[in-house]
Length: 494
Image (cartoon, rainbow, N blue to C red):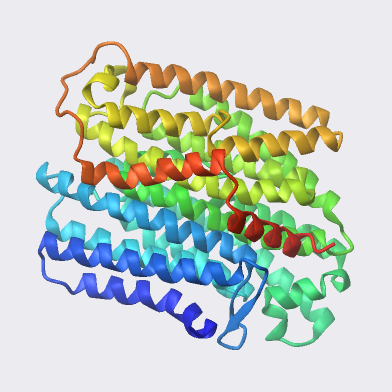
């Protein structure tokens, strides 16, 4: 298939699926079928596009306004794989909520339609070769996902939705400043008002752009896209939003959306790093941001008993890990960053979907009221265990690979103090998670148990996510490794 057509299909298909679901009859079976078929088609197109750029090829569409390279391929693969499995899980989750009368079938239609609109906005942000379009797409992700977050219409859900819009919009105002300043600084060099808006042109002329302007631009980009990614101290929207939204919405937000904001940050990181400013400046900024984020989230994790808020703070912590990896920098540091994006995506999607199972079984998110999960729902307990073991970086699970690589590279490059803080943060997270996992899994239930193990149709997508965690933790996937290596070459060409 022609690559220009494929890039356009990546955007058009989720839009069309969203529109079809929106106008479909108010019938749960019909809506579910459309939702699943649409998610499968989107995943197939996405993976086909990713396979085309594994070897480092770059393809353009719409007068170079859209493009896909190896960096974009990494993030399209997250949308395709994680998005598909979460969307499959959401069918059963929504059925549970309809049965409990928390929502009605009309609400599920809204959720399914918005899910595909959300996929469209995230894909648009990844494929944008235009700095303004990328900003617009990232802003659009907020608008398309806020009604998913506030689906339950309760006071707390509505408040979290407003908090999400207000804080992220303020943060993205800084990203807009970065966009305007980068355009102005680039135009002073290239004198072509259209061409200079392209990432590829800015990268080609990075060394000619005023270095003082680029330093300020990166500060604005870090605040702006860092807010959307959940980096401290502007992470405060994230725990509330993840706690109040439906489990599949939290899985999509944490597993994919945060990475789209990180991608925007990586594009700025590459331009400033390859300019006369050099990588040392951006690495120091990212090291500080990463370590502050990890330590703040680690201490908040110790006191969390709400399972969704616990995983929300984990999202903050792991965005800190990615920032730390960018701070370590170099070929191995950036390889670890891209690997961590995938590892965290599948792990956190599994973790948040598990919270849907836990609420169905216990009727509460409070882990102090749970207990005995291993006897009540052994499959859910095992999947819960796999997500926890990966999140705390146990060997054999996906996240261990990237965290080990970051630590090894830090030591090799003489970053003794930063890596010590990094390891202390990981140890605190390790202690917090194991104590929480024990509360929910062992002993006797401390509340009335509402149901036993959930249906296989709900657990099957979660088994797929767990399998990916183990595959990427235990095996080398050659195509994936090649894609990451080519992505690193784009950020650090030399």
